[in-house]
Image 1: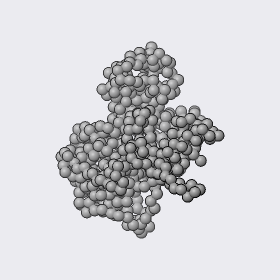
Image 2: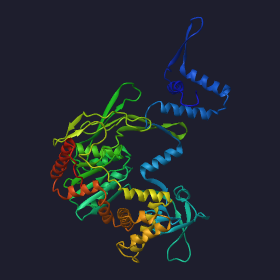
Image 3: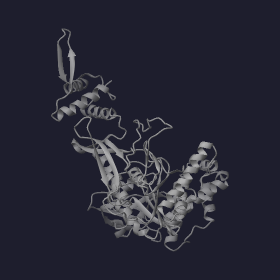
Length: 545
């Protein structure tokens, strides 16, 4: 019973840790046959059990296996879905994911047509300075043939300590021989923010995650969007990130002194004692004159929810989309021996109006609170009523678009035929976009290109009946056009294409285009939300635009 998450073991490990800190350990009270009572520190009980298992259990364990199981059991016993213990390697990957920083040369690579191909070269990086360009195929790294490598193999080989040199050979279209590039590795930062104008008068900022430096990147994006009358801040599928960055990002849109967020956390080392900490905007708002819409969905979490909730509470933005994930907890990473790290939940996040962002979940990530027709609310300075029972509720709920039956059949049949459809779309669009960028191809995708693409899919085994269905063909054409625009760096066109099937983005563009002030924008969204609520009560359908 000790081999898998034993409850007694959890208690013993916890008390052992306390005893190790010089505190008095809990004790176990025993009564022998003669009625004599004795107490033994539970840490000693644990160590005795540990040694007896090592010495007598029919299965032979080593020390590290039992300690790892005890540690896993301790973490599971917390009922904290976000608690974990990182190995040094896992923590390094966690830091890279959350900062966008790594040691390498600064390229994005993708498997295209069976070869590891450079699909982006980041500015001000060793790769950019060395002369690598989009479309180069990596054929050799450090003297080892890389023609059959996976992306992971290439990435692991190219990355390395700062200051070291990696030798890379590439094949480039138009060159008869491979080109060799000795490149000195350096710190590379991958931006989590993309910004573009759309329809000439509106601005769009996509924040993939609240990574280190992302608030500064949003601030820099304002220069690109100087002529925009309104801005969309897209936080959909944003898993969150760093607290400080979320506060700095909200600060960009709010006046000095406005409350950004607060936390209620346990006071360290003091059971049942909490401390509240609040943060206020320190700088004048950077874009006071621009209307603002924030887009969220069910995957928007953590630090991204702090940004959305703060702007919504102050009537600085309207929020469109779906209720957010509800990961409104403070997570603290603490050092452990052996260069490991412990991450545990230490408190809750609150919006400026005191709304809890947290939705309780079990260890599998499923919400544990029951749905209810009644829920707490708060009122904004402008009189809007906001739900306050976890996550951020949009001012106007707009569900994601769904695929038609023909479009679903296309995806299902592609999978059955073992055709990697997304990869084929990327490859097809990439080649044509590359020719467009170097001047050897048209700036726009030829309408007949879709028929060429369909013919290629049919050669791979996709049924013509499935591929040529009008809805499926239109769907494929949309994806190819959008991929082409992105690869050709026509980001404004890519957004226009995206809005054709992205209802949330389309409605945001409509609202911004028709509003001259934030008050107008709020009124327009509130009017539509009220109509939707009335339709829901009456049972009559309310048409989504």
